Length: 258
Length: 262
Image 1 (cartoon, rainbow over the protein chains, first blue to last red):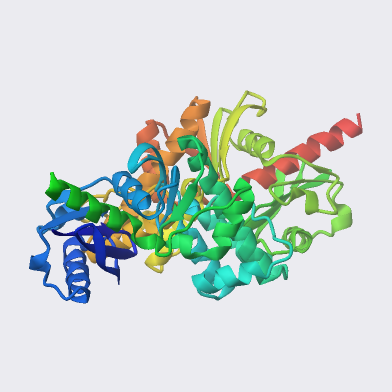
Image 2: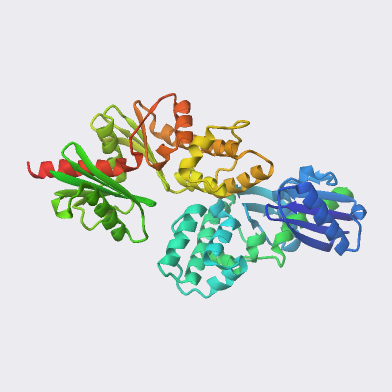
């Protein structure tokens, strides 16, 4: 029983191939929502190749995220929250609250044994998503990965006042002009993003364990900023980007079994 | 009796010099990182335009976001009050004012004396400010004043820009460009989007005629025309809509000076 889950995001497309409820390959394809059908097909092809398969060997395919509906080879489009709850339960079953931080959205899901029971979402304001970090890291003249390392060297952070990514960009520029240390600005920006995602967690009724996923979860500086805010540890799966795709693949397995 | 008003905004600084009911001179410069330096420079320029020296100015009121950093001002007064008074001096019949600058937007209601009776403000989100147009214009290498006329010459009509946030709207526009949408139609869509935001801010205070618009965005014909159509009223626009706040500050200075002299 071979299935796949495809998660189309704004910047990357994720594919997980499963055989009898075990992961046989995963693939992260750079490229997002624009032409979902083309990107999805490419990503699926590469994921299948990694497993030594042809895409036609995959018996059931579920998609989530943006644009799944446009992919002719997809058997089912599944809501993101369902995939996240399913994927996170498979990886870290103690999770009660999942926070998915992507490039252009943040989504909090209260989970109960693999089922979403409440969700809160922001895809309206960039200052609460990964794009905000891209903007600030560009101003600092570093990559987003370096931003995390840099922030860990900060001893005293700068409070960034803006709650808007565009105003935050100007603010970061003026902080640099004021000769504030880049590590302190980086830490301030990460704390700012953590603060703006916090209301989503409260909205779903924050309950431990809390698991962070999505591309932004790879940012160690953000994980620490959120942990400082929450006052307790977070769980982060080893490959936080593929959780929704994994959940979609698992749901495709269940559909076949029933 | 010569007085002055200085308005230190986040993007531009303005100064106005008045003598009685007469406007002697004004100046507009870009705000620098140092507010004090900005204030001195904009004041110096207005003084030069009027051929005066600072010691001839009897009372100075500062306003705007940098108003506390104007060392030569005797008083500072909020920009809401200054915009109301400045608009009232220009157009006594005005009761509703919209001031839209590069970094904020204010809807103000005032009475027959130019006193503020209600206001609503956005300075938290760039999507409801002039910055939105500036950013979309920059994608086509257009300056703010080029956007208005082009947006009024649509080819297939305005496009719909669904994203609210400026950052997401930029991505939306990139996609529209790749889909072959015409620049002017996209600019028209951006003007429509900003008008929607202005409208919801105005709705919070209620629009009573006459209506006036000030601030840099008042110079944008694409926004102004669409806003007038949406409200069903004509807007009163100052010859130089950017100096209305500084003008109000100067009038406050004049009135305060008169009062102090009994």
